[in-house]
Length: 238
Image 1 (tube, rainbow, N blue to C red):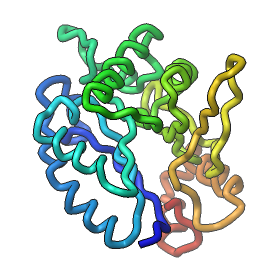
Image 2: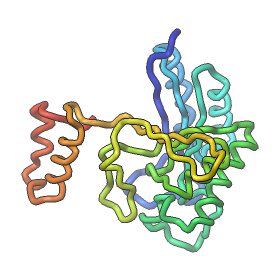
Image 3: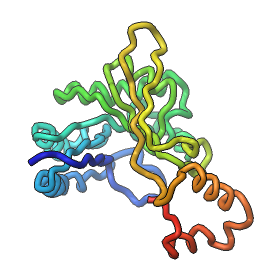
Image 4: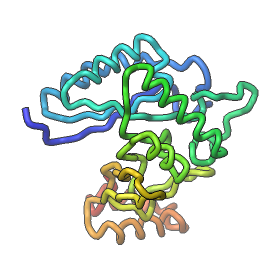
């Protein structure tokens, strides 16, 4: 069957979001459900990129599922990273929200954690060429590492979006268009930022981004104008 759609799946441990960050012995039982998802993707002609992290590759059963998926047609396994449980780790250091975004860490620690995941991929016989940062975190240090290791795509950009958390990435001025990053050194391979598909149901997108941003930053947010606009089908962020 011809492939018409592409899907990305953050393939990672499970835990109750909103609680503490799981730094040790994460559960990856959810990975066992991926073959069923893949069966549906095969049936409907969907190409899938599974962005897998260190926790998945460290678990024997989850790793076996992932390696089986990697052998299938129209499947890619990309690199994902959760810095709060990716070696090297300091067991005595509390995990601050700011530090869950990889780009906020010291450069040597960013590189060490990325290398740790990448080495695990290689040990499993995988050579990833696409990347998505945990919590959509990326940046110059991360992308320099990606170039050095032959990656061609960074899919960490969430268009028109930021988060109300310390150190969160700010993609509010980024649109849906892929961007080819200029080489930092002669002979650098091409590296593309390929955003997630997130936009508004009406154009122009920049206008609605500005409207959302103004409402969120002002006292108008208390009037729930965004919710009313979405409920009335005037515009939605989807």
